[in-house]
Image 1 (spheres, rainbow, N blue to C red):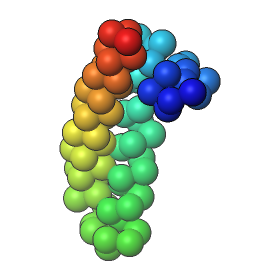
Image 2: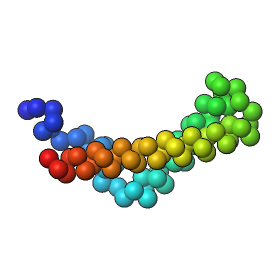
Image 3: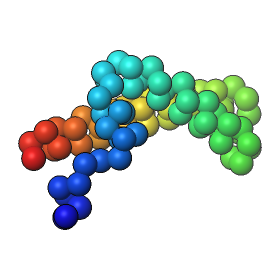
Image 4: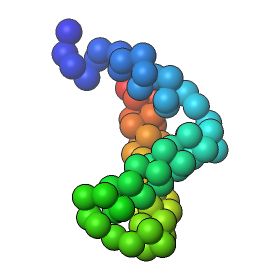
Amino acid sequence: MPESERPPPRLISWWEGLETVIQIALAFPLLALLLFLVNLGPFGQPVLRSIFYGLFEGGLLTGLLVLATVNERNKRRRR
């Protein structure tokens, strides 16, 4: 069976099945915290700057994640 015809893994199907608002509510806090820790630790940024970067970068990555999810969901529905 060609790869394009195989159903996606269950986790991907679950994620794509969530409403966009729920995806944002799940992804943003996790990404913001992760990026805060990355900026604070390995990048050695001060705490306030790390908070700002975590929120800013977390928002950007959440938007990209939601956009990619919508595109993939639509692509699967067209098949």
